Length: 423
Image (cartoon, rainbow, N blue to C red; front, top):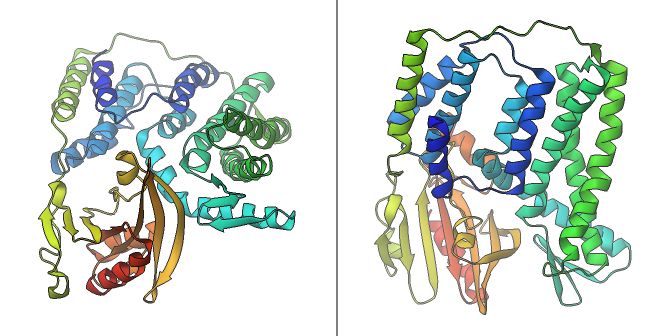
């Protein structure tokens, strides 16, 4: 009950969203408990909890507090009731905000490729389409491969579906599938999800169904069932029949009243979780670059919260956002501008001044802005998430996200080149 009370804090702060993926995962957990049962009591998560507590003492990000809360809850469950199956851990990961963030960020290049492939297929079919980043234009109508397509709901549904099917056929056939085949099925579910979204965007364009049309979501569900769920049912059933091993019946562990020292320890751990989680989340970032180069002194500079530097003049608005660690979120326009009510579209990569940057269009009612962003440590410029995170981890580099936004699209290239020279 104590952990449930603390968990509500993450809902009120908006860190955890009660979307369809979350509720699907919550409904799936009881089935997994029935299917796999629980093993002997285990202390295997004790090092994870200890590590999470240590990190929370050093890092004030809300994500680490969420990890501490979940790991403490699982640790308590396994020491009092018994060891949980790995499938339950996977479900908790899929419905977590951390998975959703990484899914949106790291599938971003896939979304751009999906747009290009879908556009090529439509051109081969004879349709007069134009491709602008993650958008496909047809007769004035705009269709985009957005985070809702590949980054969030669809990916979560596909992965939760394959977990459900593996549990279902395990109970039906009384056979256990080796871990290597379970891994292959999860990868297959992700690949089928990409295929399903490709067919979804092609169908939307061919049928000219815009996002404000009710059929937009219907087409998504149809593609999910036809290209993801249906093939997975056939493959998972065959895998259990072909490679499944007969289940070995084990006696359930006897539930005994936990010793007093264990109850005391869990009360202390619950108190530690409450101490960290009820603290106001703050992020302290020290920027490696405190002043702007002389060539940029014409901008009005303002220091914002969390170490962010804002520079503006009559033509452009620039944000310089230091990134504290390789695991940190970078607050790109994908999240920050959209959080301010803007819709980011026509996202593409563009080659300027010898490097590649992301560009896009920001729209809010009748207001339209043009933006570009990239990552830089003063020596190396990249748009790759893996590239800058690896350099931060391996080379101790201090990367920043540079975001340039203008009203006049003709000025964007010049502003980007100017700031590329500075950073």
